[in-house]
Length: 436
Image 1: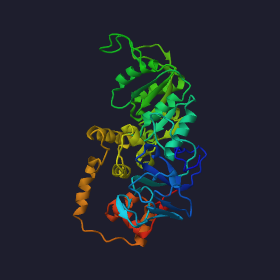
Image 2: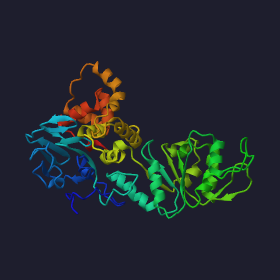
Image 3: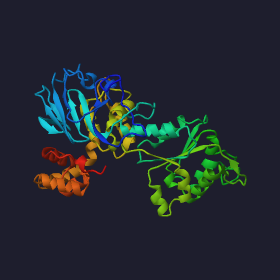
Image 4: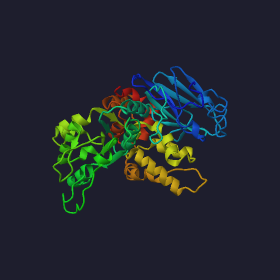
């Protein structure tokens, strides 16, 4: 199947994919859910005309879109720059929610053409298929590369350490590893944070009768409950020193001892652990055992934050809303938001929208997403408007901060959207200043 085949889903990179970056145009919103998550690369010197009369682009995604003109917008690539030009369309072309005539399309920005929202991402060129897991969805290269790694390590008996910010879906990755394993036992999870050491050890390893006050009967622990399956240790970075010692024995010898017992038992579990903390830094500070880290980190997986993979947002919204219709304006808002709470926050946002939107109406703007930015906006609004920086000043600043937009905007004392507008007007691509 070719890229323009409407039945094609976004492919995933193999472990040997090239790290070369390509400009990929992703559909993050389409009235027909089957189109969301599809992409096409924009080759050097390419000149695309998008509209109802150009069926070759994305296999005719605009064919039935009455909001799009026959020839709506052109997209041209000139080296590292992508230029867009509205072709006197009836309803206009919108870049990051602002109507444009001509503009430079920057990595991470949304272009609305009719009822369709497109996202530009410079990334590795995907190969393979990414729609593969019923609970853990995504389409972009980062998601697909992680699926590739899970497919590799799943059938093995290695201990796996999953790292990533809070809310990225580390538990989903752990369940995916378990489903791909050759073990027929259950997956049992425990959170190592916020619970006392004695309670945790009792939960994990069980206890004998009379081991502590209230232990009126012997009880098997989660290690026993997970026999023949997977034991998932969430937030392992918060484990106490006592629990770390017990876990080291479990991983080294496959042995554990119920609380209050002098009898050693044999475990039959595979351990998968997860953390949002930097375990190597904790080990260097003496807060985490280096020998335990060595046992845990036999195979390490990194889950990227949602802000680094906005191409996944469209299919995630469909997943959380159960394919309930949404407006283009909502998807533009969701893609532009930074998601400090990652996928978990996105899921909660979509669920809230579903609960507050009457049946039969599409999900629309989520006003509470911008609420936390309001104080900053009000504070900046009383400042004297800064004169636009020159191209030379912008280039010097980007070089100094290696393309970090947040740092550049902070030094200029302007918002990131304002800085993006200045860069667009100057024809500067910030991605070219970032380290490869």
